Image (cartoon, rainbow, N blue to C red):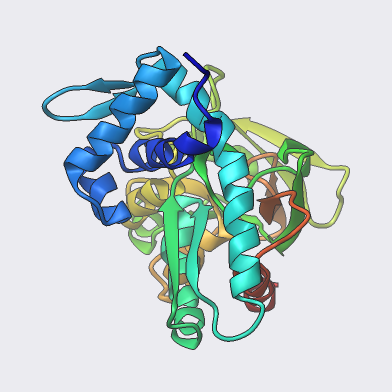
Length: 307
């Protein structure tokens, strides 16, 4: 018996990537505009020809086996390149079309990015933008994203990607008016020892905040802090501050709206928190010899909006 021709199974392979993305035969069939049984048959045929179990099926969920995960990871990049080539050829003229997949941090997405996307999508009604909101640093190539916005240090960006600075960010120390009325405002970093400080956990180390003087960059003060609440999400920290629970360090994009509405106040003028959150937001994309017009246009829009 002759070996099967690989090109016969290109559709099977693509449908496997869609199944992994949708996590359901029903949703995969809807996206592909085929029947659920057709998807199941293609996956079964692929398992038969590869001699491997690619999908674990239960009554409630679909998960890929280790072999299936590995195969999809290897397929996402070439299928992405084929999609870019096709979209580039189709979209050299006329309106932007297709789907643009973007991932971005939770707080920045909810408070800044989503409101800013509305005018762009009104300008390009035939383009669909899929936004995954997560603080997890996802793999763009293996998970099929066109762009990612990341709040991180420059050295954390992957060398295999194209990256540019979206905007600079700063860390602010804030509290609610209710907290300040009850406990007063700290007059120096050292006074934070006696306040309720809400922290962003950094491993197992005890929380400590470091400040730099605006007058003398060489002057740094580190203060051990403690309080009733810690969380790894800046929006949750902001909400705890709004409730009057304590003082917190927040990235400016998490605190800006609350400051504008006078719901929180900035503290310790003359001192700047350091070594807390990254100082920049970056936009990154996988390196590709050909970039779709949708990616280029949205990148320019982001730069003009936030830079």
